[in-house]
Amino acid sequence: MTDDSRTGTAVRPNPVGPGAGSAGSGQGAGPAGSTGGQAAAAARQKRRVRRARLRLTHIDPWSVMKTAFLLSIAFAIVTVVSVFIVWTVLDAAGVWDSINSTIADVVGSDADSFDIEGYVGMSRVMGLTLLIAAVDVVLITAMATLGAFLYNLAAALLGGIDVTLAEER
Image (cartoon, rainbow, N blue to C red):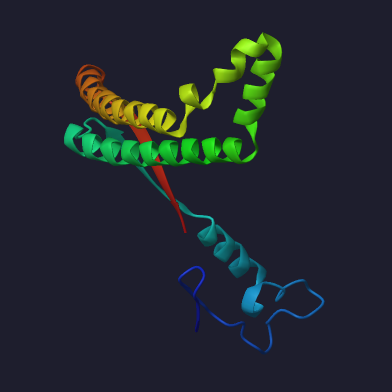
């Protein structure tokens, strides 16, 4: 017997001698020289699926809060970095100078003292972004925790969610 590591089953080699499948009979064409019946049995074993039906009736609000807090911190970091990159690219491309010259052309001589960076400068934009990111961390964490509590209440009344897990062998 040889071991087939893909399926975890032992494969018995085809016996040689009288009564063993001949090359023209169609037998012996399966894996490891097995007969047609053995190949079909091996195929059924390969496709066998083990299933488990579970019911999700409780979600721990503390673990939801910790997970939501960490994910919202990651979201806040991504937000701050992306706003910084976008503002830097706009500055390097000369967008702010172009806006200043366009406003000077439209308004006329009164616009010489106008500077768009006084309104959307790096310090103001990053400060506002940090404030929004901090508020988002608090709100996302609170909403996820509240969602876990609400799910637990609904699951107590309705029984939860049925989940079927499958493991292919």
